Length: 93
Image 1 (tube, rainbow, N blue to C red):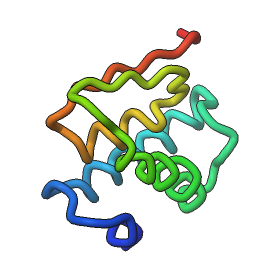
Image 2: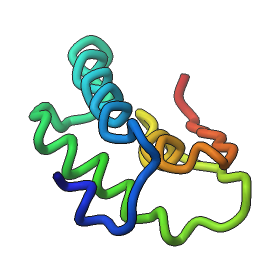
Image 3: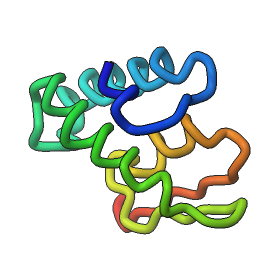
């Protein structure tokens, strides 16, 4: 699994939660056009894995994701770091 390539272990249930995230992105993207990427495998690579590579750079207990768009990188990072407080901010409604 791609998560295994990112480093040490993740909290239990991480893969399932990230799968829900990608499924919801795919579902809502058809209705609201959240991202130009339509293919699920590309969403995993371009949104999910690209977000998770930033995990080692996080510092502190609170994280602000400015310009989050459809929730990246903030949502995947929040899934793998449930002990941190994430705030996602975007200029669009």
